[in-house]
Length: 263
Ligand SMILES: [Zn+2]
Image 1 (cartoon, rainbow, N blue to C red):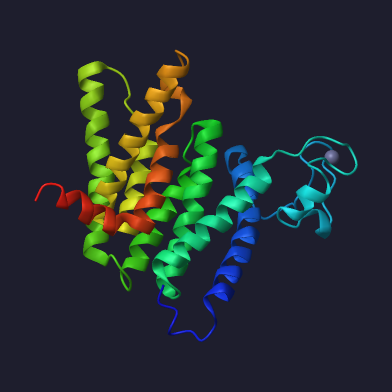
Image 2: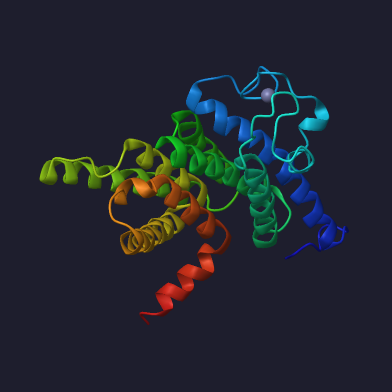
């Protein structure tokens, strides 16, 4: 990591980004719960999903509150989903991975925003088989806007949007004509366009290949363990999210290695 521009030690940067990840992860939990239910993500303040009692500040501390309360509401005793601390820890870890991959600077801020969107899309697609437009469509615009000043640059970003959105859209159309079934939802198309906007045309290709690879591996495991529910086991958006994250931290080396295989 090139932390030379900043005079703070690396461990301090890691700690700061990890803490920010825990706090933002806590907000992502709110988005994950409320967006598919068409509720405001600003109001009301966090409360128990069961007895609706508003949470006090000390019940709202990422991970720590869950551990102290032993995963139960203080008043009604209802179990709090393990998803809350898990999302917070994953966000913190993913943020640190981005810091180590990108280094401090404006590009890190863009990558953290992108990572946050991926985590929300992953969780909502896993639970509801849904990729909300309120994330993907502004995501396309945000990725392109950032590319005006930062990598991958506006031309690569536009090409990424066109390829990410276009190729999948074409695939769905062809599949529809040939087989009469929808291969994927249009949520996937918009999500891949968003990934293209942030990462550019080369890494959106890497993402698509990685997601298909992960999909294939998951399918193998599902078939090996039990039959049925193959396609619903993991929605494509969840695999796109994981693949896009990998591409955003390690895409360039992956691409170099992959192309090197054919030299
Ligand atoms: Zn309660």
